[in-house]
Image 1 (cartoon, rainbow, N blue to C red):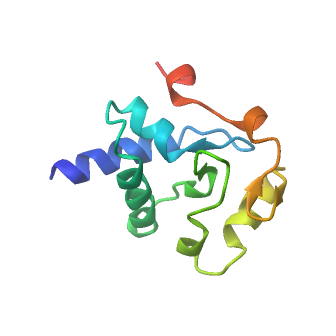
Image 2: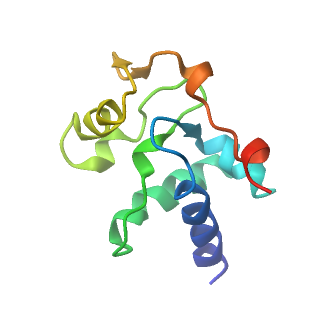
Length: 110
């Protein structure tokens, strides 16, 4: 039950990431007070496809702006395509201008 609550908190944050912006697994974990749980955030997002509601997991990348979770989207370029549809440029599975597009939940959520 504790994992389910953590997952729901992750989903609530990810739903608030604006289109055209990205955050990281670690930033979400830090915001939730669980700094060492970036991998658990990733696992939660992997499970998000089974929630029955849209969770924009494509907006969450690793700390270097890499699309490390792309294999969970089924087809190889789906995550990239979703990001590009929002105006985010991706080259070699890395967000271009990652620093400018980074959305930090600690700064944007109260």
